[in-house]
Image (cartoon, rainbow, N blue to C red; front, side, top):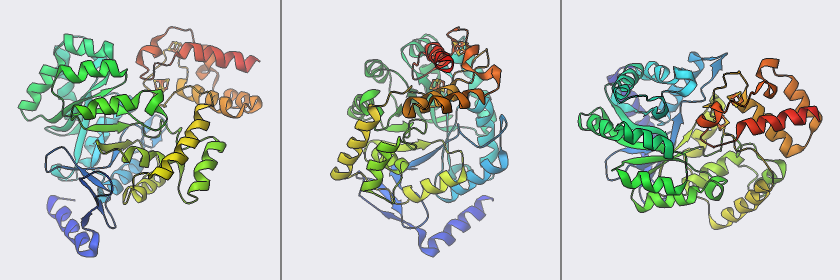
Length: 407
Ligand code: SF4
Ligand code: SF4
C-alpha cells in the first residue's frame, strides 16, 4: 500500500464512523476509538499519540526456529489496521531475526505511519567502536533511516557500568542530535536503587520496565514506577502478563476473577491493571497468535481502569498466586545454553508441577523432551545466569528438576 492508498483507506474508515473520540477515563490525555482503533495516549508534551498496546516482536509465530513470515505479516497488517503502530524489536530478539522481519513487514507502509523501536545490545559491546557498527546494522536490518524510540537494552548495575565506560549514552545522544533517534531511553532489570542511579545520570525521554500486578511488590515495580514518574520519565511496560503466567492463572486464583467478571479473562485483568497507571505510555505484548492479537484489540479498543472493587478482587487473586511457589521465568529466551538445555521449557514444566504437584504428569512432560534438551545436561557453567534478567539461579533450578525426575 503506498502513502496515497493508506491515506485513502484512513479517510474511508473515518467516513464509516471510526474516527477517534476523546475518552478521559484513564489519565488526562487518553483517547480511544469508537470502533476500530485501540486507545492512544499522548506522549509527553508532543503531538505524538502512542497506542496503549504496543506490539512486542519477540514472540512472533515460528516455523521451527525461523519466523513464520506469512502468519507474522498478517498479524502486523491486522495490528496496523487497528492502530497498533508501535513495534518493539531488539538486536537479540528471535535469534537476530526480529529486526529484519520488522523492516520487511513494515516497508509497504509510509514511514510516518508507524513507530520503530529498537535497542542497543549493551552486553554484546566489547569496545566503543562496536556502537556505530551495531547501530548501522540495526538501521539496515530495520530498513529505516532513524529509530522513533531507541534504548540501551536491559540495563542493570553491571551493564550500566559497561555502557558508561564505553560512553554509550554520549554516542546515542549524538545520534539523536543527528536525527537518527527521536526519543532515547533504556530498558531495565534491577533494583530501584540502581534505577535511581541510571535515571539521574542522564536525560532520558522514557524508560521501559517490567510491571504487572504480581511484580508490583515482588519485583519492586511500584518503586520503579514511582521513581520514574517523580522524574517525569514516561514508562513503557514490558511483561504485563509476566511471560504468560498472569494469563494462565492457577485455578483457585482464576476462579476469583471469573466469579467477579464472568466475561473477562485473566489477561484482561492484568492489562487493565497496567493501563490504570497514568504515567504508562504503552503496554507491550509479545503476541504469538492472531487470536491473541484479536482479543487484545477488542480489549484495548475501550480499555477501562480497574475500579476500587475490582482492585480488591485482584488483590484476593494475588494472595492466592503469591502462596504458590514458582520460578520467576518469563520465557524471554535470553539464556542461551551451550549444552543445549531447553531452559525456559524446563522451568515451565517445573512451574506447572509446583502448582499442581502432579509428579507423573511432570515426569511425562520431562521425558517428552529430546534427551539433549533436558535439565540433566546442565553442567552448571553459569553462563545462562549472566543473561537472565530475572536473576534466576538456573543451575540450581536445573538440579532441582533432575532430583524431582529421579524422585
Ligand atoms: S548453567 Fe546449565 S543451563 Fe545454564 S548455560 Fe550452563 S549448562 Fe546451560
Ligand atoms: S530463565 Fe531467565 S533468561 Fe531464561 S527464559 Fe527464563 S527469564 Fe528469560
